[in-house]
Image (cartoon, rainbow, N blue to C red):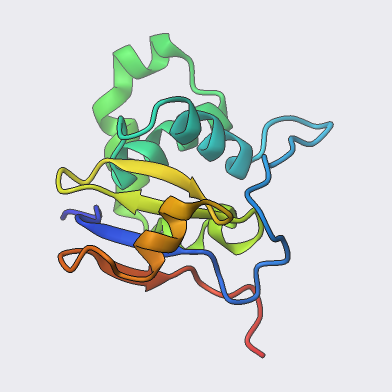
Length: 141
């Protein structure tokens, strides 16, 4: 099963509360999934596919050691993907923190701040081959 997007742009959610891209904070108790998603995606644009990012966030959020991954990596990955996972349309990055997500033709992603000209071009569908999807809303209203 392939969970990746290709030539796709996810816009910020219609009910996103910010007006520009904001770096997600961590909690006192540790890293949050949105801060891990942001750190990985913003630090290395077009390095990860959606699947790769979701899995990398999972192992970092759970604190799975490199030794454990070397020993049981395939089992850990299989267990993670055996359960339904929310795609990045449901991520807090487009829902709450003002980041659009662009997936290139290879399925690799980059974060695009909602206040940027590049965001507006992607959202307006200037590239005819680009599929534009809205980030999921936080509330039903």
